[in-house]
Amino acid sequence: MNNPIKWVLNQMPAGGDNRLSVMSADNVIKAREFHRSFPQYAVTPLARLDGMAECLGLGSLCVKDESYRFGLNAFKVLGGSFAMARYIAGEMNRDVSEMTYDYLTSEEFRKEFGQATFFTATDGNHGRGVAWAANRLGQKAVVHMPKGSTQTRFDNIAKEGAQVTIEEVNYDDCVRMAAAGAAETEHGVVIQDTAWEGYEEIPAWIMQGYGTMASEAAEQMRQMELGRPTHVFVQAGVGSLAGAVVGYFSNLFPTDPPKFVVMEAGAADCLYQGAKAGDGKPRIVAGDLQTIMAGLACGEPNTISWEILRSQVSALLSCPDWVSAKGMRMLAAPVKGDPAVVSGESGAVGMGVISTIMTGDSYKELREALGLDRNSQVLMFSTEGDTDPEKYRDVVWGGEYPCEL
Image (cartoon, rainbow, N blue to C red; front, side):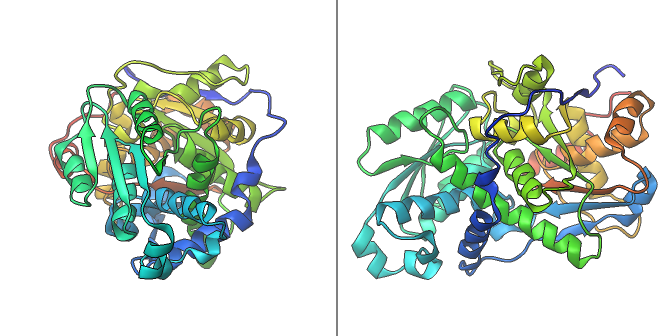
């Protein structure tokens, strides 16, 4: 294979404080209750791909389909909205349980709190979620997008009333711009899932918001009588989603957690590089971070998530773009009888990885190390739908990024 998936088994020393308490059941319940208060809330589907599982030699394969989330075609709104609610609750010396949608959209709230300006950096989905939540709750949003961001994603944010720009810098530099803007603005606050020293509270809240998706998936697997997943595949940019999912399931099954596999875009594989070094210290990947997996194009890891992941994850993978493209096509045209899933470039990498590991002779060592076989109950997360419809069609219809053999 000319451009293979790179992988490393996790042999890093576990952290003393692995931050699992961030994703405790109590914290996730608070987030899910907040989301339930929105009239737009509904549990997103868990697609059960029994035909695909049989074809690949697995016991079961379930795909959490976030293309239905709040009508926004991606999961990100879960984190940004809950972090905003936690921030507002703190400013008002109230508990987040009081921050319901009805209260936050009331005239009473407007008189008591007024307005804040929420700054963020995004490839599209997170910024759209922050802008959407700010718009619904009568707040302001300022969004910076990295160079290469698409017009469609820009327009989706702008139509929510946010002040949005595409900058000539990468994602991590856009994060720094957002932080600087918030520092210069009265009632300005950064809503970012990238944690760094001195900025960890809000990213932790964002992770807890993502817990709603993980808790729904666990509940749905129980309802399908599949029990606990034996393997969870989750993608990572800065690692907040991965840390949230891994932290949630590690807390849910403390004595017998699933095996966790974390996947990154090859152009922005900071977690993989950290695991490869093996010393337990995070690594940073610089440059333009060019990949079709725009939502994963982040070179600086979330420090909270890193502590969770280095303690709990079984393997970390660095994935070329063809892996995601393969996953997009497989989910769009699955085995007969299975439901189709519209999964975008950052959502489908798990499908590409799972199918490649299970069918490729060159990945036999990884497959055996993970114990993937006919007894495996596999869960993955399709975190976005066709958030860039043109690119989606180019890949699924036009065959862009063919499989490397």
